[in-house]
Length: 606
Image (spheres, rainbow, N blue to C red):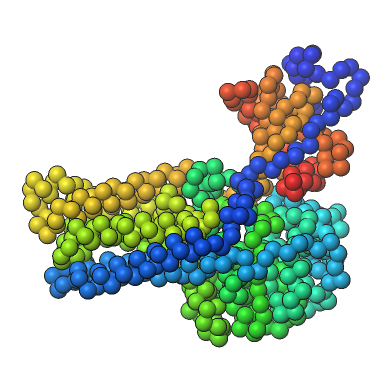
């Protein structure tokens, strides 16, 4: 029953009116972090980026040769060789990044197609996702232009999904077994499809209406078999990103915006976690999607390339997905990605049938997961070597200290230049530590162990301690001070990682409804309020007048995408003070999801 509210009379609707005046403003601007784009001019491959990359490679190569010839001796062999191998690894990684980011416009983004003679089927494999997650995906799929049909492939065999698909006019399919996971689910559908192109969407990926029009022009190349499509996340803060409101950017952006696009130059774009469009004849020629245990998408891409098909990465995000905020699902995702890369690298024999540059681009991308270990080596080795065996150089220690630091700085400058605004900066090392610990399985425990080791090492090498007591006779003053500062930097990064993981930890939201930051206004019990964010399950509203009390029943009036009034009801679950009003959290009733799904999809499309 609607409650009797204490809202002042002058804030209510005039007597006799059945709709708010003026009409509620549509939710018009999607403000989650994934929208901002670096201008195209910053993505051009110009001489400055290449010159910096080549300078960093040449300087790094000269430094490594000097280290091997002038600073090693039997007295420091263990420490010297260990750190030298780490530096060689860093140089090889920079070479791989340069290879991938050398030319970003080898395959220019074409103008979208307005019409086509090709038939396109959209496939959405699903298993255990909730209605709140699936509904925006399915509503968006029905609005995709140029789609011949949309098919939901349900391995969960859920009756409520049958009804949802029937309401939306989507074909529903369920198979008898779950063999092969999602890849087997797609392969089971391929046998009965007669289309020219299939688009495979994840069950939490909300597609833009013009997605198909953007990717179809690539298929004018008769040898093109795969288009991988970049995606963005609708939640701003997650364990996987630093966030674009801070100056440093996450490595995820560097991969999606730069490296994946640069691999087009070497015909090495592969199907990662995002959606993909595939030519039916190509996927049928290799026997369908790879139904291996790990790395189904990547290994499917490798097999397409080995069979002579081409691929391309479309760098403009055409879907909105979700990035985990924390919890076990995030850890599982990191481990799964690492296993996928290792399986593709060591278990996919087709990789060695590719061309040399194509294979080099693949290997560089697949070994990127190991970069987190290199970071830990850089943070811990100098201090541990100083404590246990002395500096990694038998002579020219001061020169070594200066050159090692200069080489590292030059490498970071080159990476930033090649990133064209998307490269990871120094604070993204925090994310690397979080992802490393997550890959070990118990993120909190692993991070604390790493922090304890670095803290112990830092305490052992405080310059005043060893200079007064002489307890570290092998250390020279220059290297000792450098190692102490280095340990302090590493400790700061780890402390940030612990704090960050604690802040975003908790249950994963991967299986929950997307909560989207939007702008616009609605009427709450007839009073105009500002929308902060919205999901299928609830809303956060900024109220400037009297707010209904907690546990009260309320009604919100929206304008739907067709400019018609839509009323949804719910319960006030929390009220808090804000600098410019009061924030109300509304839990919406579950039988209103269709109108909310349309509103959310409309917000994402804008």
